[in-house]
Image (cartoon, rainbow, N blue to C red):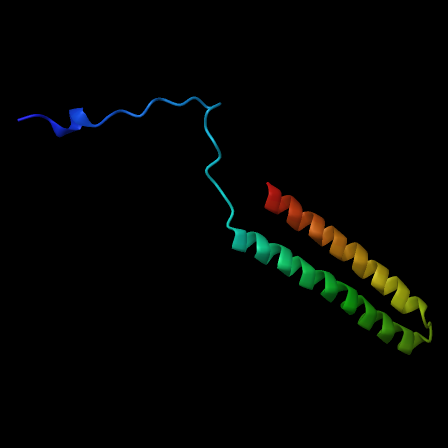
Amino acid sequence: MTDSKSKVPKRPASSDADEQPTEERSPWLVAGVFGALGFEFVGFIIGGYIVGALIDGQFGTHPWGVIVMVLLGLVGVLWHIYRVAKRFLE
């Protein structure tokens, strides 16, 4: 009787330079991340507008509250997109 283990071909040893990254991201994951970023972008801007309008109504500073809060919302969403993209691309 022959040993069945001896008939199994051995895999060639691979060096670190030959190894390919095995982790691939699903296209659905990519679509989900970027789709969520689109909703967050709109949400930050609309949220800034609403808070700015409330500030303008309370203090009578029309249109400065809206302008400042929309710009702060824009800066906030750009920072958030940068952080998510940095984490996603690592």
